[in-house]
Each structure stands twice: as C-alpha cells, then as structure tokens.
Length: 390
Ligand code: PLP
Image (cartoon, rainbow, N blue to C red; front, side, top):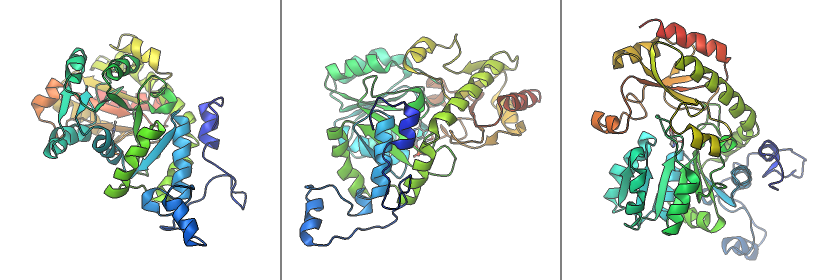
C-alpha cells in the first residue's frame, strides 16, 4: 500500500482486498492445495507466468500472501516471507545469504547465539561473534568476506544500541548485506530498512503477534533478496500455518496502539526503577543517561516496552524479587498483553556459560521485564512491593 499512508493505516488496510462476499479482511484459507480448470492454467502458476495459489507449504496461499503484503508494507520493504518461528526466519536467512559467513554484533537472543556458535559451524558456515564493545573490529572482520552482518538493536537483554545507518554504510562498502532483528523495537518504533539495513527480521511471536498466542517469524526486504530465501523456506518446510497467519493479521491491525501504550508504560516503569534504592542500574534506551540514548533517540520513534533492571543484591535476591511479583508472570518471551519477568540466566541466556554471560555484560542480578497492557501505576506498585522483600 502507498507509503503516503501512516503506519496505523497500513496496518489496517495493506494486503487486504474485499473478497467476493465483501469480507473486510482476508479469511483463513486453510486449504493445503488449490485447484485449476486446466493443466495449462496450473503450469502458468508453477512456471511463474501468473501469480496464483498452488500449495500452502510453498507460501502460495491467499492468507499467507495477504499477511506478507501487510508486513512488507509496515516495514517499508518490497517483499516479506512468513515463517513458522523467528528462529526459522533467521536460519533460512543465514543459509541463503550467510553461507560465506555470518557476523553477529553484540548481544542477541540466546537461541540466535546458539545457532551461530553451535549449529552453523557444524555445517561449515563460519561465524564471527563480536561483543557490543567490539564494533570497532567490524571492519577487520568484513575482510574475512562474510555474506551477512546480523544484529539486534536494542539488544536482548542489555539494550545495547547500534547505529543502523553507520553499520549498513560500512558493510555495503564491503559488499556485505545487513540484517537487523527488529523484534524488540517493532516497525512502529524503528524502520530498519529506511535506515539502510537490507533485511528486517522478526520473531512475530512477540509484538507483531502481541497476544502470547502465536509462534511465527518474518523476513522483510528487497524483492530479489527475499526471493532467494523462498526456496530454502519451501524445502526446509518452514511455512507458517494459514490459521496462524490469519491470527497474526488480526493482531497487526492493532500493533501501533499496543506498542504506543507499551512504550509509555515502560518509560514510566524505567523512571520509577531508576529512582529506586534497591535497583543498581536500569537498562532502557529511553533514559537520558543510558549509553546509546542519543543514537536510539535518532533512529527510534519510541523506546519500546522492554527493560532490564539490575538488583542491588545477589542472584538469589533477583530471584526473590521475581518470585514476589504478583502481576508480572515468570516466563520467557515478550510483547504480549500480560507483563512478564525473567532472569536471563534462567531462560533466554541459560544456554550460555557464566563466563560467556559475564563477557556479554549479562549478570545474575538482572531481571528482564516485558511491559504489557496493565496500568503502569499497578506495575510500578507491584515492582516496589517485590523490591521491598529484599
Ligand atoms: N529474536 C529475538 C529478539 C527473540 O527474543 C526471539 C525469541 O525470544 C527470537 C528472535 C526467536 O523467535 P522465536 O521464539 O519466534 O523462534
């Protein structure tokens, strides 16, 4: 849909066509296969002369196509591919565009780090994991001729901020593609393609889905780059189910209002936590004194619903705080209506050794908060009562 429309408008209308019954949104086509009147018509679709539905695992399904169009529009990309999970999207991206090597900058979701450090090298894909403090080593690493540079910003769970435009410029000068995992920010807060990245990657399980009731992933970018990923998705069998795609589409229509609310509440919680004596440090890019705040303010239009607090105390104290919370649910994941709390060492970064965590600035006194749709005042009161127990 035309870029002249605001993202809220595109979230509602992009990818939708009134069907023959006048349905205002694309219904669920749960068919696994689609029929043709003649073999010639089937061959037109198989051989790409005409767009059409054919087989759901290939992504040639009206519900899947409609949601992909909506997602491409809201990330301002030419094309999008849906996947059964965020990890599926990352894996297909790495296999397609990262065969000669993948560089990851800074902290990332623990599963991403495991894929890069354990599985990809087993199939001969070289990977280079740079700490957030080692961005200055990026240029030297690009001399190794990787295919792809991948990073999150803000990162999980320390909220490091990386300059998307500057990194993209440097990588492009070396002929290397750039993918940004935009899961934490969402397209409402950060338009990574407009800033220069080649791909936006999402765990749609989080803000895009937004209700803790679907698992999915998406990859968005230039038509030719995305088209190259499609055969991998098809033959690795990574397709999202149409029922899930329809649920995702339903959620995308309310994405901006959900994210705006979560931005506001997270900002209020971050300020309250920054002033609390039992909190040593708050990691939230919206705080003026947070390292990376200026860069975040330049490239984000909102600071997101995620924050991490470091308790003034031990790992056990952090566990006691998490256990004492009444509104926050102890669970991994993020982006849903219910606020969640997790200690990175117990979930998202459990797969890393204590040394690896400490090298990445992830300590055991940290608790990560995903701010939901509850009233900010209730969440702050809950955090204060829990902190009062240590
Ligand atoms: N990227 C980020 C930032 C995540 O937090 C996660 C999961 O927590 C993923 C990717 C992987 O997504 P999924 O769980 O949908 O495979």
